[in-house]
Length: 135
Image 1: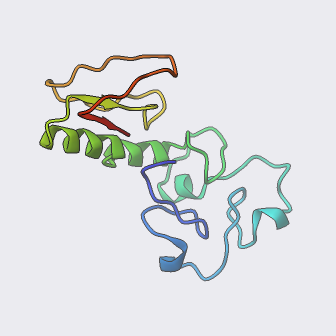
Image 2 (image 1 turned 60 degrees about the vertical axis):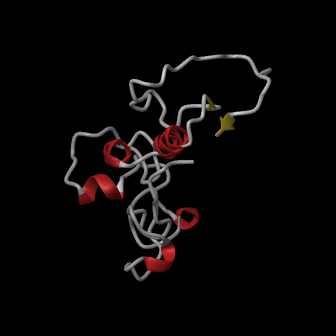
């Protein structure tokens, strides 16, 4: 799950299908007005609608839902993550231990406040006690 909202009608960001201003479904692969299932260009390189809208011309070919898209990555870096909210909550409520099952953003760790020391544990057997807040 990503902290950036994406419309699955026009594949733009920061709105849902119910709020979309585009009249018809757009193809996530070629950008034309049809569903991916009906796309006649599936064998051609993908075209990202978000890169076109942002005038990004040097990106490697990818479709409009690719999580490695430069537009998606830029939005992720600006978006407050749920982990940041979780850290803030734990700080406000004086939680001693936070357990996070995985980082919210691949290849990037959030900015932890200096009062928090991250400890990375790789086993699935962790015992929870009182004053523990799990995410």
